[in-house]
Amino acid sequence: MLLMGDPELDPERAVERLRQTTADHNARPGQLFQLSLSIGVSALPAGRSVTLEELIDAADEGMYEDKRGKRESRSVWSI
Image (tube, rainbow, N blue to C red; front, side):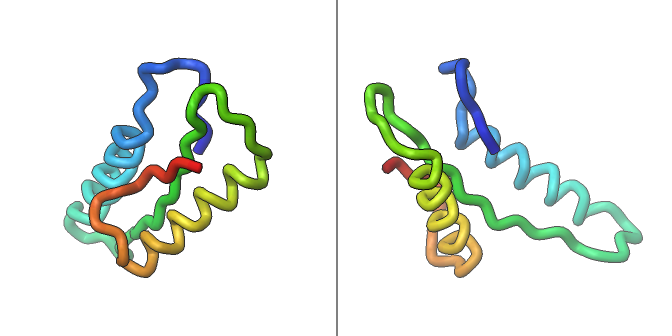
């Protein structure tokens, strides 16, 4: 997921919306399968310069930690 350009775009809120949409799907009666998500988001502070690969690596790290269930409620990683 790429959120850029608008300072009003909140990564935490975007992640929560994805999780809620998944939960809503799973709560519907008669579903043949349940969906699950593992999400990692990296944030680039203003004035900091990094490569796209570094941003992706940071998001991947967050996703794998989410997948392993080691994170509490943190879904955004700063690099």
